[in-house]
Image 1 (cartoon, helix red, strand yellow):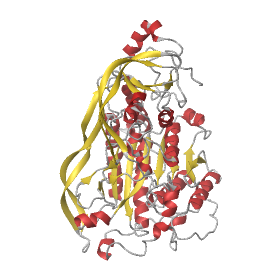
Image 2 (cartoon, rainbow, N blue to C red; image 1 turned 45 degrees about the vertical axis):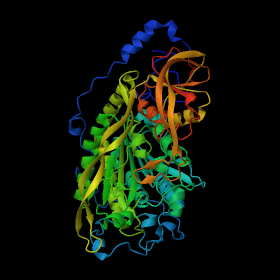
Image 3 (cartoon, rainbow, N blue to C red; image 1 turned 135 degrees about the horizontal axis):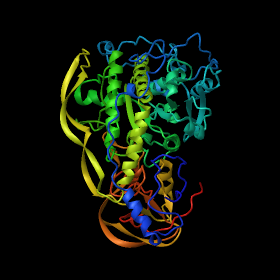
Amino acid sequence: MTQRPTLLVPNTPSAAQSTPLMARRMPWRSSLALVAVLLSACASTPLPPWPGTPAAVQQPLPRVQRGTVVPAPLGQVRENVVVTPLQSSAPAPAAADSAASVAPYGPAVAARFAEPPTQYSTPGLGPERRSFTTNAELGQWLRNMASAAPRGPTTASVLSLGASQQGEPILGLLLTRAKGTDLASLETNGRSTVVLIGQQHGDEPASSEALLVIARELAQGLLEPLLDRINVVVIPRANPDGAASGNRTTASGVDMNRDHLLLQTPEAQALARVVRDYRPIVVLDAHEFTVVGRYLQKFNAIQRYDALLQYTTTANYPEFLTKASQEWFHQPMLGALQSQGLTSDWYYTTSTQPDDRRISMGGAQPDTGRNVNGLKNSVSLLVETRGVGLGRMHLQRRVHTQVTAITSALRSAAERATNLEQVRSFVARDTASQACKGQVVIEAQATPTQRELTMLDPETGADRILKVDWNSSLTLQPVKTRARPCGYWLAASATTAVERLQLLGVQVLRIAENGGVLADTYNETARETTERADVRGTVAGSAGTIRIQVTPVRRAIDVPAGSFYVPLNQGLANLAVAALEPDTQSSYFANRLIGDLASTARVMSVPSLVFEDSDE
C-alpha cells in the first residue's frame, strides 16, 4: 500500500484512519493490478468471537474492592491528601439558583429523595452556599489538582480546550500515568482514554459538581488506581456561559448538544477536537433532566427516578458497540445505582407541546454528543440525573447519583480496556470494508410502542403507574436506505463542510489533477423549509432547515483539481454518511454548510484520481 494521502487528518495509527482506496500522485488507470488487490482487501471482515470475562484477560484492579462502586470516603477531604486551598471568595448568587427558594413539590415527594450517606465537597456544594461553582473556581480547582505534589506515577495536566462565546475558558483535566501528557506520550503509553463531559446545558449543574469530585479522586484519591489501565480527560463544564446565566443554551441561544455534527458553536468545536485528538474508547455525557414542568402539566405526575440512562441509538451504529454498551456498561451501571439505593430507568423525555403526551427515548438523529461520538466508534453513554427546576434541592443526592454512575463507567472501561480496543479495531475495519457494497441507512426513526411508566403522585409522593405511548430508540426503523457509495465528491467551494468533517476526524482528500468519476448526482424533486426538531420539539437556536426530496441519477462527472473526495473505506464512514446525504434534517446541505446540490455527489465506483500529497 502506498503512503497515506490525507488533508489535515489526525496523525494516528488506528484502523479508524484507514489507508484509502487510492494512491497519492499515482493515477489508478495506470495500476489496474493494484486496483484488484485493493478491492480484494475490502472483503467483509469476519465477526470475531465476543470477548470473555475480564478476569480471563486482566487481574482485578488494586485498592478498590470489586463491587464497591463508591467506596467511602470518596468525595471528602482526607488527611493524607494535600491540596492548595481555594482562594476565598464570595461570588454572587448564580442565576441558576433563582428558583431554589420555591420547592416545586411538597414534603411527601421530597421524602422520597433522602440525603445520601456520602457528603461531597466542592466550592459549589458548601452548606452556606447559594451559588454553584463559578468558572473561576472550577479553573482553580483543576489547577490545584495539576499542581499538587505527585504521590506516585499519576500526572494531571490542565487542558485549555477553547473559549466560550463570551470568552470564558473551557477547561479539562488530563489524568494519566504516561511519561508525558502530550499526545505522542499517551500513544506510547498504550492505555486507552475515557472522556467525561459535564454541563453542556447550563441549567444542569450537578454534572459539573460531580466531575470536580471525580477529577480529585482520580488525581489523588480512591479512583487513582484506575489510571493503571486508562487515561481520563475530565471536562466538568462544556458551556460556561449557560452555567453563568442558568440557561440551557449557549450565549447565542444554541442547544450545543444538538450541534455535534454541524459544529456551529465554539463550545461544540472544542469537544470535537478533544474526541478527535484523544480518540477515547468511552465518552460519557453527564446531564440533568426536568423533574416537574411539562410532566405535571400533561400527566399530573412527577418524575420518579434518580437517573435516566442511554447509549448511542442512531442509524449505522455497529452492533458490536451496541452490545458492548449494553453488557459492559449499562448493566453494571444499573447494579451500581441500585447498590446505593438509587433508582433508574431508560432516558426519556416528552415534547414541549402540551397536547403531545407521547414519551420518547433519546432521539435517533446523528446530532447529539451521544450519537455523534458513537459514530466515531466509541462507547458513548448518557447519564441524566433529576435536577432541572430544582435549584439546590437534593443537590448532594444528585451529585451522588452522578458520581456513582460515572465511577461505574470508569471501572467498566478499566476492566474492559483490552476488549474495547479489540472491538473498536474490528468495527473500524469492518466499516471501512463495506465501501462500495450493500446498503446504508440514510435515515431511521424510533419504534412506536407502549409501556408502563412509574411516576410519583404530586400530593402523596406514592408511585403512580401510567400506561404511555413510548417511542423506543432501542429498535430503530429505517426510513430511507440507499446503495452505499465508495465515497463522496465535494466541490472546491465546500470548504466549510470539509473543515467540519476534518474537525470530526473524518479523512478528506484534495484532488490534485482534473479527472472524472462515475457518480450519483441528486435530482431534486421537492423542497420546503422547516424547523429543525428533536423529540422535545424545535431545536433551540437552529435556523430553518432545507428539507428536500431527491432521486439519485447515475452519470459520469468531471471533478476538477482543488475539489475534494471523502472516501468511505475509513473507520468514520458512517459519520460521513450522516453529514453528506442531503435529504435529512441533520445534513450539511439541509443546514447550509454545503451551498447547493451541484456541489456534492455520491461516487459509485473506485475513483481513478490523483490526490495531493499529505503534509505528514
